[in-house]
Image 1 (tube, rainbow over the protein chains, first blue to last red):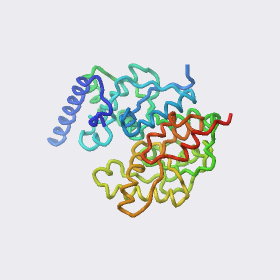
Image 2 (image 1 turned 135 degrees about the horizontal axis):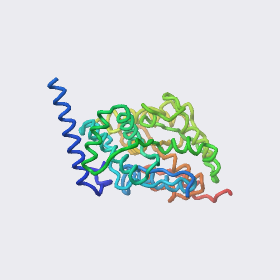
Image 3 (image 1 turned 90 degrees about the vertical axis):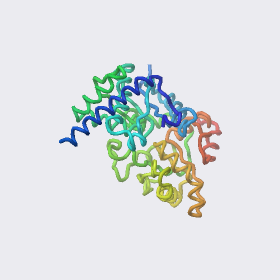
Image 4 (image 1 turned 30 degrees about the vertical axis):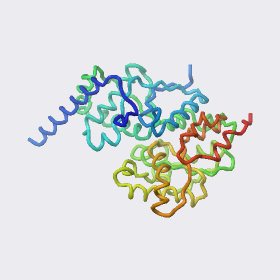
Length: 36
Length: 303
């Protein structure tokens, strides 16, 4: 919903860094699962 | 000091200018009467509903909710988190369940949170506002404040799915929850316990992507309310409120019906019953005007 401008957090930098790390972790776990 | 204090997670839909801003306005007035203090979690973020489920992946979605938990713990230690939005409540509840039962997910979440300078030490309780009203205050306490009963109004309690499945409200049946009916009764109106569409899904985000299917479901929800003689529908969910009210015009065109039934929040009914005016109950936020409730809200209060 934030995409529509209803609410925006102040700590955008922190959120982006947090989500980037979450994607990285998730991707590495998926890769590990596929590799068996 | 208030009798009941909580960390408050309002969610995006209740922000100023958003579809459920009237929900927030009426909740604030209701809480003032009931001496419930809600302190907004500083710099909270979106729960990731809909978009999170579609694209973001599991861990980022949980991390978004965990950030709110961490901010709550840091700024409002020891307070339970209360959400008014059913989707926010469901998303946060799911994250709580998953993190509590998976050490790996918890460790991954903490690692991601570290990037935002945050951490979680204790898992907070996540409550929907209706749980607070029913479990912490109780119907008797809520009823004490009724000074303008909504006499003569017949109201269908539409629970929807997000506050009902999979977690639900404690003590309620998944098939036939009755808490909304009790709330309708508590404000002096007549409930419809046999309203068989009370837990049907409103279609959620399908209203955008599959409008025909969503509108078929909404038609059943509205039609059943009319069939039972309701003049109004009440709900605890912003998405249900928006979908069931907004699409009645399109449904009328598609099916040749003449639906024109307002869909309200429980908090709006309570504010009017507690003696509040139309502004305090945010009745101007309806797409379909609740004329009868507006008339009642304009009447003097019986004290």
